[in-house]
Amino acid sequence: MTLLNKEPVKRAEKCLKEFDEKLSVVELENSAKTALDAANSLNCEV
Image (cartoon, rainbow, N blue to C red; front, side):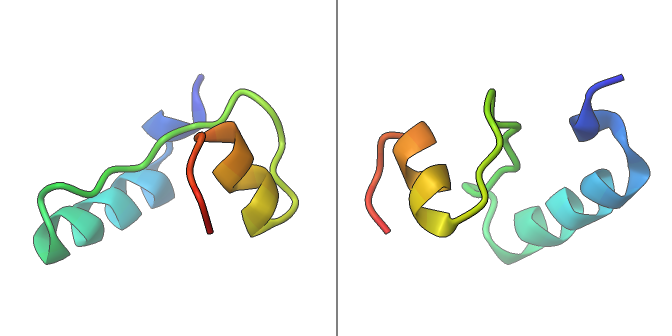
């Protein structure tokens, strides 16, 4: 089961969508211990 199918993640994504429909939750391939790690995985800046 992917993390995206877990109920807490679905609730968080629902809240994000209510705030801004363009936002979404993604599951990274590798662990991201910091915001910089996450940004690097997503090829974006912090």
